[in-house]
Every structure is written in structure tokens, then in C-alpha cells.
Image 1 (cartoon, rainbow, N blue to C red):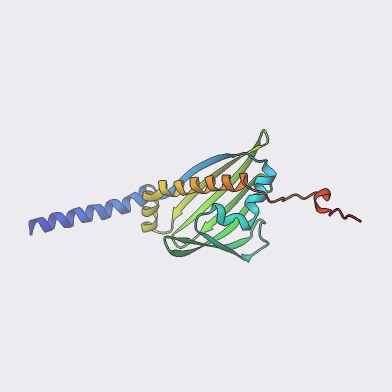
Image 2 (cartoon, rainbow, N blue to C red; image 1 turned 120 degrees about the horizontal axis):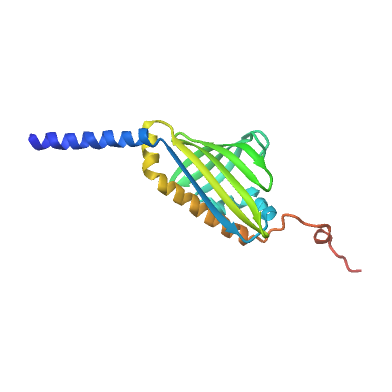
Length: 188
């Protein structure tokens, strides 16, 4: 019986400790960056092209507009992912956008809310892409989980940016056709 009391005491301490972690560190914040060997305008075009999303966002399935004009401030969309065999939906709201420079978004799900900003900077014909994220769990259980898995969430963003770099650098689509490239030459 004495051992049972010790076991329950240890379990109680672990449970209290778990919830205290969420109270002490309720928010996860991190920043990441990459350098891309393409100019800003092309990098921006690749990011804005929905056809490219599955190439750099792990588990991405589809995006469905909910309200507003896609790609503009105030636009709301549902983004569908599959993670570990489970489908999840995240509500995305564009909160700010400066074409070829930055985009800020708010992501909301049952588990957490996230404020995300992506900034592009031109450096000698290349593009530095920086992201910053602030995420908070919805509820004490979610906050505790977020505090424990914060490093893995940052690692996922680093993977996404690495995949984005490959997607941009391997891009062959001409997002800016000129009059010369769009005119067919006909022989008589």
C-alpha cells in the first residue's frame, strides 16, 4: 500500500508539472531564414502559386476560399493538411500583404492559434526569405503540449523553408511572359 501512495504521488507531481509548463511558457516563438538563388519577383510568384504548395508544405492537400478575394488582406481560407494519417483543417486569414516583400497571416485551429510573417529581401539578385512565428495553444492542455513540442514545430518550419528553397530554385514556369515569348512565329 505504501508503494501505491508513492506511485500516485509521482503521477500527481508529473501531471501538475505538465500543466505548470503550459502556464510558465504559454507561447512558442521562433524565426527561420533561407537564401534563394533567384530574384525576389520570381520567388514571390512561386510562393503565391497554389500549384506549388504541395511541393514545399508537408502534408498539404488543398486550400478552399471562405471569404474575401484570395491573396488580399482579409481573405479567409480553409487549408487542409494530412499529418500522421489524420486530416486537419486550419483557418487562414491574411492580415497584411506587401507584394514582393511580405505577407502576414493568422492561422486558427482547435489546437492552437498562430501569427506568421514571411519577409523577402533582395540581396544582389538573390532572395533572403525570413519567417517569424508566434503560436499559442487553445487551452491549458494545448499550451503544455506546445511548450513541449516547440522545437519540433520550428524544425517543421525549417523543413518547409528548405523545401521552398528547392521549389523556387527548380522553378521553370515563366511567371512574367513578355510580348516576344508570347508571340508565335508563323512561317509562310
